[in-house]
Length: 300
Image (cartoon, rainbow, N blue to C red; front, side, top):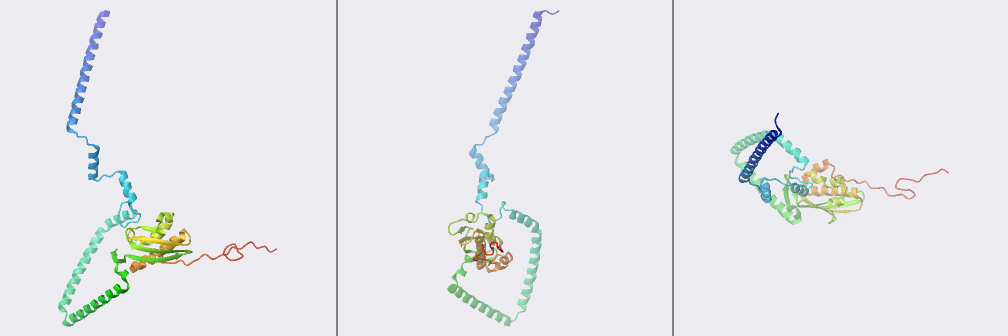
């Protein structure tokens, strides 16, 4: 049998050994973590907020607020390609698929042009002195006609001089048109600009026509002729209601665009933009409730 004192001594020895081991392990752990922190502080460099923003702008990274501003400031009808328009997304896919076909068509056109040039050179070599005289006389006549046309334009129609080219067509810088529908009448004046629309010199489009389909009626001619954001539009309205005024403005805009470029007649005619609805509300007749509605008739 072991005495109580001997047991007490054995227990104290074990406790001391365990305490020394734990202290040594804790010291090693703390020393290793301090070394790692010192190494990280020497190798790694923490960027400040200004430096991080500067580098992000150089890389082209934008914040959500900046992207929202770009979306809000972008025009609703734009001929430029942008990722926010669904139709431009589909058109870009079609262009990628049709690149090979376009390249083949270009090659065929180049071959035809080379053959035509060779034939023309052969004809020129075989030409006579009479053909040269005829060409000289034709050039003189064309030159005289061009001079006469310029004189007539300068003296009689000065507005036709102010033109610009868009979508392979010549357009007038200024044009006007009149349209009617039901009891409403509209006068439209378009001028080359950036797509500003004003009604009665003050109101905006969304204030005058709160419904989306009425706005689409007014802007449909620009969408069809691919002239969105090319002209500034100034509309004057009188009489009728919202729907009648929108249809009258649609007709007036179509006529103004046709006056600016006569080559778009088929496109406007195909979508019934130049169709003038001559129907009118029948007036109230005497002895009746409305134009046709009658009071209840009793035999006795």
